[in-house]
Length: 111
Length: 117
Image (tube, rainbow over the protein chains, first blue to last red):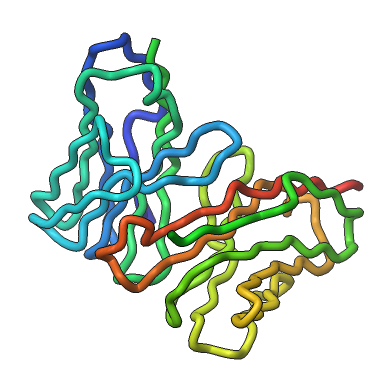
């Protein structure tokens, strides 16, 4: 049972570099989400999607972009990485506005 | 704006004892979901229990139960017969049914629970 998978697990970026965090779910969930978790804090919603081709902003979308071309995949793109984007990133999915299932997280450091 | 407050940054409990983690929230909505998630050192977020606001009955999952007081906007988690594997960070979360809101999903800052052998 794969559930929600994220790659990579860890990444170090230099300021100004860009990268894509990958997220895939095999539960045929319509909803998918990206969160960031800063030290000592709860999760904050970056972007979400209610289905293929539909995305919308969460609480903290600046500096990020997403796309949803398939039900399974929801990549998060960081353009021009900044130290403020150092965080742990979680992807999640849900069938509807109900329980979310989370991936294992990606720890990103921007130096 | 909706908020979730966990007033206890850390708690400790003796193994086999009972512990209650508190969570309060603020909202003007009448229908919503509330969740408790567990985050062990592996960082994986694991759902512990959920509550639909329109249901008056408190949710229960084995050793985990909640005390949901809608009027007081309180949603505490009770862990009975605490086990070493319960040691983790626990997050309370609020979910609006209105996906047009910026603050549709709000997490508290968490409570770190230590289990003493």
